[in-house]
Length: 79
Image 1: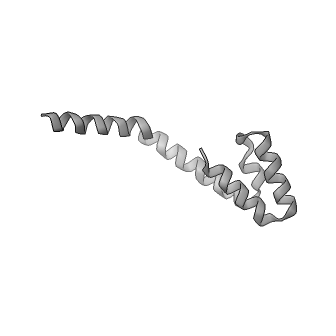
Image 2: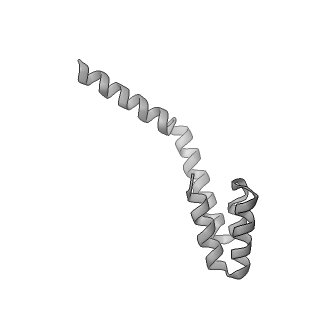
């Protein structure tokens, strides 16, 4: 019996941590869109991360496309 309650708690914790399946699909879709934006136009991908991120990515993109893409991908992938 004790093992069964532990299993139930761990499933509930996993469900709480990741959310419902619908939320996971939405999160996956948004992250894919952000990664595509980070590759095509890096400053647009970090709009929701704050002014500092936009300025950094814009400056790096102005210096070269590759540094801007790398910075945008790093910023998008951080929580």
